[in-house]
Length: 265
Image (spheres, rainbow, N blue to C red):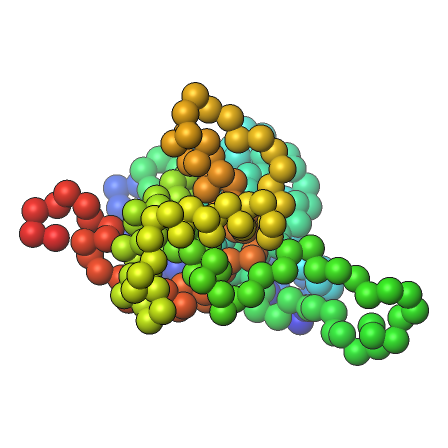
């Protein structure tokens, strides 16, 4: 990784904080940038003009292949969000040193009075292993953990199932069977898709493709069905089997699909 770009957007003047200009820092491997409220005796590279932020709140350290965040506060927990993910984030507790950040684009959020204080970190060139030479290794080939055909109907059902989380409309809910039927019906080849067919595709994904073996319990069939749908979507999203680019496989959205019960929708 050649380095990262740290960007602090401009802030409008408020009763608590003065107006500020945007700040951008370019850091290479081995560089360290400290952030916080700062003072004459506590210099910082990224000044966060908020009285709720520690004078020396934390630091960013760039390594050869990733960057790390240290929380130097004794009481505040920071969040690192992935703005391009489906609500993905992790916490950095007080005094945590060198927490590795896996996101290529991250937002660091510090608690404050009123609106939270945040800045962005861009690490656009993460390194990936190539495949040259791998085919010459001796022994039998490695089987794929999950083998999905992205041209199949069951994959379309999977994408529609995960759509609310991929669009960050809900971190918990997944699409219902009737919603999936309505969502896909305008796509060529899916005009005759039924609720029973969607349920069969979800069963096939759970039992054969994703091999979800944990029992889904509940007092009724509807509860068990909901648990299976949530398990399928959760596993697919955790392992990146369905990603934002797959939303392009779905037909254009209609407002009525996402606003049930609203007059005039």
